[in-house]
Length: 181
Image: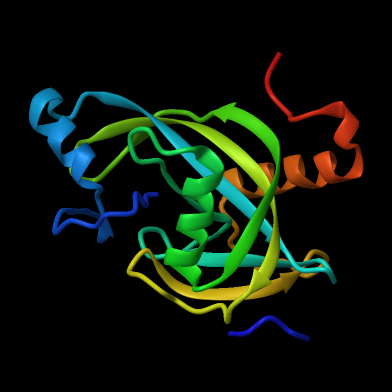
């Protein structure tokens, strides 16, 4: 779908998947050493908005929920660079990463294969630059643009919180990014 009017990620893909979602090779290597034990991983999320406030969402392949684009940073990767990469890899859209809107630690996640991970997520406000939104990898089953006042049913709770953080930041940038105090 083009713009009207106008994870699990990680960049390098491997043959390994969890619940149908590719697992970055560096995580596969870590899992060979630590087994299913908890991994603490850096994640990034982007709320990509058009000039007329349409929001880019992807329907996740692993759980069927609509979500903001997110992914895992590669070792040494800068967060904004990694997020811009994830957005393009997953949706075909190019976006400018504008500002950090929130820093939050999520609850541990247990995967069907027994792996446990916990993510420190950096959520960013992003601005649409160009590209037609489409399913561009195997992490999503659908991609689309939605009006902020007509978001789809079945949005992931973590994405709903991150979107609230982004909209609060956009309303009052001087307040800085959201984080638990």
